[in-house]
Length: 155
Image (cartoon, rainbow, N blue to C red; front, side, top):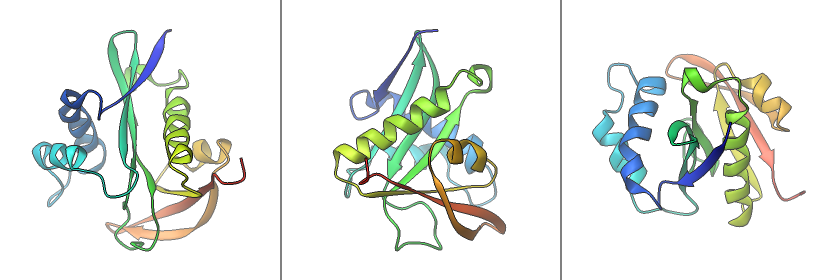
């Protein structure tokens, strides 16, 4: 399969698709974001390094991930974050999550980011395979989540 990754800053029309994916995958709860609110956040001018990426298989959008300034309310001291990693179910098992993580890491490294952060409820094995290190447990919306970091300055 042929895939490519594009930046939403280069193709802003993709923001509403990414917003729908993020809301359905991560924010579909009372008080969560609407698709319109999430679209505005994605398109908001950056404060520090920020980008959202969409992976295409041939001409079909298959997944997304981004670099954001903040992501976990309990840890405003940590920045920036790999966030919103999502691959459409029909495209899973093809290495696209890894490709998206690596693209965000490369973008962060190009912006001289020394450390990236993320939190996950269920994907710790994926990130561990990609050299992310578990650094603790945090709370997010009443759930324990794993806090992880990726040192980029050593590469």
